[in-house]
Amino acid sequence: MMRALFFLVVLSGCGASAPPIRPPADTSARLYFDGKLQRVPLLHARVGGRETLAILDSGAEAHLAAGWLVDQLALRTEASAATTIDPSGRTTPLRALADAAFELEGLGAWQDDELMVAELPEVFRQIGIGLILSPQRLVDAGVALVIDFPARTLWREPEARALERLGDDGRRLPEPKACVGARARAGAQLFIVDATIEGQPIRLTLDTGADATLLTTASPVARELMRSYRTTAESAWSAGGEVVMRRTPPLDIHAGELHVTRAIPILSSDAPAGCGQDGQLGLDVLRRCLVVVSPARAGARCPAL
Image (cartoon, rainbow, N blue to C red):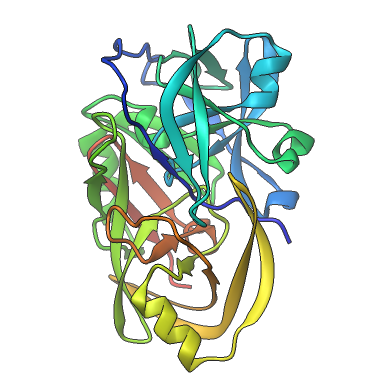
């Protein structure tokens, strides 16, 4: 079984960046899902005139382009001190893409010098995924990206109007807390949701690029669950390659007004939890929700599951 999991992008030794160029706000796009990646949301994109697919991943702190795509297009890259850290703790060096630009179907063209280049696993090339995009970096201050997973569409609008949508019928998650890593560029942040699992408090990254809610062994709660329940082994994919996980029996998770029962994968991990997170809240929950993401705030409203 293949899964695309969240990963951290640690950016260090980076200089000042030019303001990115954004398309008009009154644009929208369609989301697509690929069965090989277990319903990870994809956008049609274009880089250097080449069509490709992009994962929309709120668990990513920066935009990434696949090394295979950049090299095929002979795009110019520069050395960088930045690295990616996947959930298992694997670190991969990054290159900076000079004159970075990409186009998203229905949303228009972006020019952003914070598009980095990573050597992604072969499965990404086989499916045709050339970009991993952080939605909180696709909008400027005061603007939000609204992702309507049931309708498979997304659009940009003023942040205040987008957040008002979370007050409609449905079960609302507690407002995620924005976390900016100590070495991250300004605005590169994750959103952390307070929740409980079997009554124990946990903190989960709001992660639209992950097909499943999971915990990592860096979490004391996860380690206690592994001691308390019989688990089964399985493999998965992250940005750093194949990883091994243990799956628990179904457990109760509460997050604000939302209550779900899920068998939870626990990933063996040495990755630092810079925001104190125990794991991630993935698409097994979020794919039925309306999610709002801006550079500073995020939220989700979900139906009863």
